Amino acid sequence: MTKVEDVAIVDAPCLEMFLLFMAGMNDATSSRIKIGRAPNLRVLGYLEPREHVLEIGNTVISAGTKASPSTVVPSVNILGLEVRFAVRNEVKKVPSFLRCFPNIQTLHVKSATADEATGKASLKLWKEGGPITCVQRHMKKVVFHEFKGSINETVFLKFIAENARFLEKMVIVVAYACYSSGEDVNSTLKPLTCAKWVSGTCKLQVFKSPFEGTTGSPVYDIRLASEFSQITDPFDLIYYRESL
Image (tube, rainbow, N blue to C red):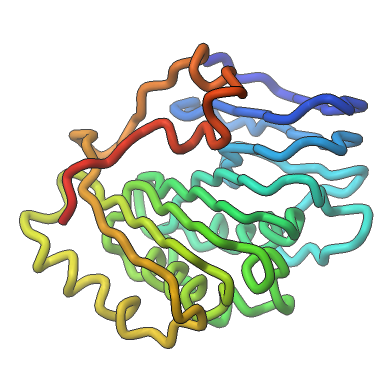
């Protein structure tokens, strides 16, 4: 729970998981996360566009960065992102982040709270720069944590639904205090449920977050998360039982 200025994976052939927990650090500085040689890295997150400067090889990944052999980490198949969807400039970085990991099968996205909204992010934003390989070819599961009902969140989920042809499951965990009934949630999600889902077999599940308040802070268990023989996805340690 200590913020560091720089983390560099220089040459780590045995590294399988790289887990970051830097939420709640509200100073103005960013942390540089540099990924060099890590051929077996399969789990990474939570990356935060507002907190982290992502560097792969010698390239800093920013909005509009094109994918190339020197800017991808093909071994990663589980990725966690924490995004303030109300901040448009932050959302603009997400497509570039996703292009760095072309073989993602499971994507966890946590919607963080912003002090104020700074613009809408339309479907056009997600399509700029060309196809996102992991979405179109490999993504099977998406878990959206702390859904608050904003247009930008719904647009992102609609983009996934209309482009992830191999998607098997989409899980939406609604922020605890956002809605008083499932009917309100269904109304908000109508643009998503009425979208032209490219995968005909995808299952949509909606749950209420067990965390009170607006932050949705989970409880982390280092011993459990590091026990590779018992768990393959450390972001799945939390179970949402109260279905809407």
